[in-house]
Image (cartoon, rainbow, N blue to C red; front, side, top):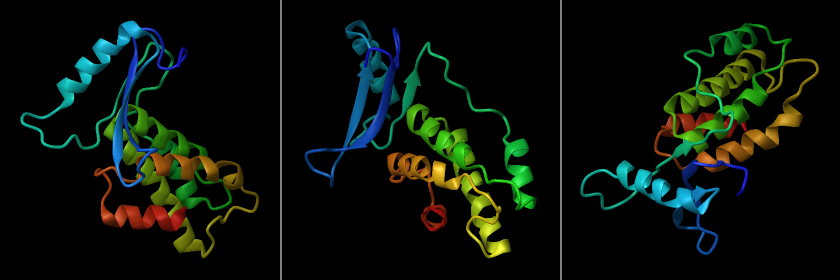
Length: 169
């Protein structure tokens, strides 16, 4: 649209076909007509030599304020891993999943999985899916599910990770 990804920007990501839900499509989007050629050129540059299938390609180029993946999220995941009275990293899960969907930066996918693993481990240890006495999960669960829906077919996730994520959500 006119705002996102913005002037001189583009976004490339997989999506489910609205005409045939058993098929996937690739979205190459830009805010201005002048950015379509650079977006398509970036797409072609992402293709492996002699590619017979496209696979899951993701890239975001934007001049808008969009965070880069941090080197570590230990300061976010550490406290709720041991203190069950504090909320889990629910908003971060949604944000990190969406960031992976838009950018393809594998660190975002790793943080998404790691945060859901924290929630899974908390449930295993406490016997409760939301062990904190007052939870924000109800305000965030729809965003976490939406983020997962955007990336659930991505080959970056192992079958064990998929199983854990589905069990948490």
